[in-house]
Length: 260
Ligand SMILES: N[C@@H](CCC(=O)N[C@@H](CS)C(=O)NCC(=O)O)C(=O)O
Image (cartoon, rainbow, N blue to C red; front, side, top):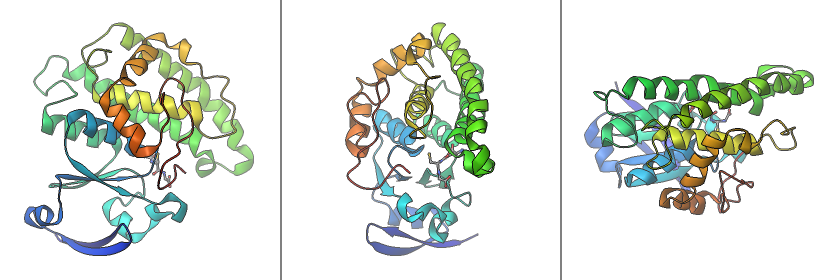
């Protein structure tokens, strides 16, 4: 199957034919292209790529212009969600799928498929994606799930669930498995850290008295450690995230693009 699409690169609209690996290799200067918006779910993928030391290009999705809804972007992700990672196997969407694919391909940041730790790692990665991130989306985008007048009560209903999810993850972190410990982060460390950042910030002007980092001290330690890593410093510079993006986050102030 050949998928024809055009996606703007900077100010120039380029057309390309995604049909074979050779096309892809001809087109790309680096192995991967990350379609991102500042402080969006793409941040988790950027952090993983930086931590792995894998070269990649980034391509801004301009959310102010709703570029994620344009035909060219929907050719990459029909769901119109950020991120997408273009690879030699085609575009990948869904944050956890991208993380797992990268970890397996590069043999980094996750237990390998034959490791005894794999099962435990996978169940918590899928929990983070299918439950925590999915619930978080309801808080961020409540108006997409219910009438505007009821959005705040929907948010209020979800928050205790988020608190419980964090408590459960904190208990896992307390047991310091190899794949969720401060010394050497896995993709899950980065995923959780970004979600906790977003909980502290979004949506703006919403009640967040329910969220205290100190309530989950083992996760707090993971976040503190991540802030010292060069990968996090690179993401801070690329997306304008401020000096303590996980433990005391401020709204992103990127040189281009916008978070919402
Ligand atoms: N399940 C998706 C969720 C991604 C997601 O929620 N992306 C947000 C940005 S953080 C988005 O694209 N929002 C735009 C919209 O909903 O129109 C994933 O893990 O990739």
